Image (spheres, rainbow, N blue to C red):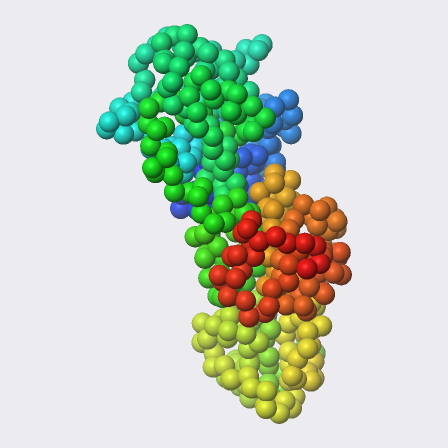
Length: 488
């Protein structure tokens, strides 16, 4: 019997780049992914297309799957011989219930591996400008659950020992009971003016932090912050005023969905990240060649030009050539690429690429591209178009839905008409409501052509930038200090 394995992977507190390399490798190889609410949804785009994704998010009084059901899912899929990843926010061993889930697997002789992650008590505090230890302020720290299984849910700890023996205390998910926490610590020996910090959605751009003292923090936080959040109590919190580095940047609080399919777009996205934004990749449509039929290859020797519209078109063509055992050296056709990324794909495969110039006289051309690309204006009259089927992977569709549902994305940035077409296709293929997205997102695009294309799915840009806009102009348009109106 083929036995599977379960990997318990810590996804970190939010910032997608805080996932370990070992965790990323396990995620990419997984057949089944069982993931929590606090996992950054964009990590789901790292899964393979065939992976089954199971959401088991938990909110107060609202559990998608009960703990017993989660454990059964792990057991069932592992027994089927699957590679299962249990993807947990933060670190699996810090209030992640990995002990309970691993115990069940051990009792049933199912192999497993635990891949640690960065916990919020370490990362979120430092993203807020507070080191968990410091030679002058904090020689020890404790992590404490902010809620328990007791009838009232309040922390069940030895308050006197906690108050007297530890320099810094970090409470996880304790906002609901922050008044009780502050009162108990003061009652059992902590000074009322002990500094306190509460940080919500730590390491995301939307991170929000409020500082006060044990005497004032409950009133300051009330109605302002909800879980997921950590509470940090101790003198080390004083350092935040000097050391905060993450939440004072120009684009702090911006969750931007934008295309990153070209080198220029990737560089622009990186610049926006440096300015404090979370940038989430635009959904990429996965292309599968369904029309590279016998007729195309029977006529292959007659083509004088073969034009590729995307790196995936290159891949589809080369895969088919390999399957048919065709020697490309026998072809007289010259290869052309629509853009630099496609040219790079051809060159990486060892093929010469002719320069595409407007004065070229096209004769007998084969064009390989996708359906949305066929609508674009082109300088050539193709003898034949080869159309690739378009699909949205499960990981991409799920990630985008979760990003919107959890409020991680508040801005849509479209950089070209081509990317606008992809977004239109995304909604058509997934059946999602563009109206729901439009109501929740601020839409910024470059160029009137992209703006008109977005109108097909009722996306009215808040701001239309010039096609030659610089990264600085884009950043200013995204910042709060620029007032935008619908249709401007």
